[in-house]
Length: 200
Image (cartoon, rainbow, N blue to C red; front, side, top):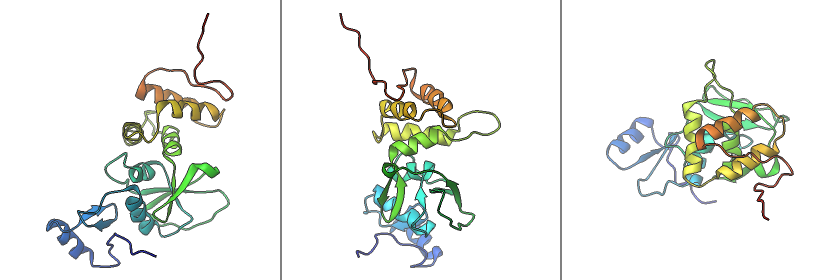
């Protein structure tokens, strides 16, 4: 197995790692550090989250997954992870854990960590519950915009995915949030073609 390209507080005291950052010898990669010459790839960021989560059954989701895919510049605090309903784990206070159904194509293994796909990540962010004021959170909105901006997911894919979900909670709210982010457009329903054209 190849040696990880990350340096952690398991390797060196954190004070020395932070001094190396000040000296320009290391850069922060979430909860870990790496050489400034190391490309900041999704697998490197996933490995950093995997080091922090420690349990390979956890799946990075929502804003943590958006950071791994490169849609936002910083990981959230606390990290966000999910597990299937039948799995039981213990996590520390530095992890926000959700229990969700994960379909076969909804997560990938990356850097030793399960990560929700960009499409599943964006759908979950759009369906996120909101605070008392009823507004879509700035962090969630920014993460969805980032996924769209880097081309990890398209508006058409999001609309089709939301349309296929039926009546599960927060789908209509997610469709309104997507329209607010990207303007109006039809949301295709299950079994409906994404584009219908009239020709004479």
